[in-house]
Image 1 (spheres, one colour):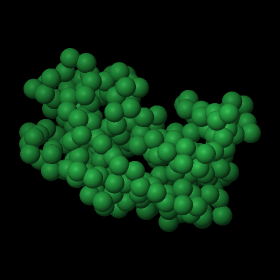
Image 2: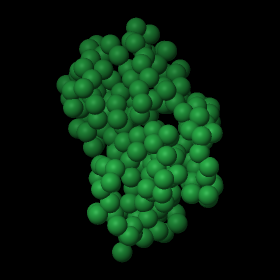
Image 3: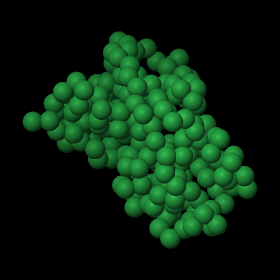
Length: 206
């Protein structure tokens, strides 16, 4: 039976995932990398796998290097947003092998707290790569809003829901992030490219 663990990961807490294939992903729960992790597990028909959210590319590759995880999945390129600079910087610091690469179609949602209307939004935040993929939409529809980069799309959604970010903030993230954190979709599929494809790397310890 396939088991997929998707709880919040804590360093040194391995009891719940002992004996499982630990797949670290760049992003919090609800990130596109988490979705890519599930896609990879299904494609390879893997059993007894654990998806481990590690937020940053640095965190994912450091965990792989220290053998805290067995595989790492993170984005490296988008056909509209270009190279994922964060990933490139992290890749230059660690020694690893590339098992495979694959593409995933990305649809960005503009998420807000329940009841927040467009007129109330003053700041839009997300990972820099997500903002690049929606640059045309943001320029055309939100010329007065402050566009602020954040460490992760899904983490921005989590922080908006938990009141870390003010209610006047909207975040660009996945539909799953909105569902996980109880946020409303203000506008759907705001990415500029009709076919918005991101390439993900599956890395293993060399």
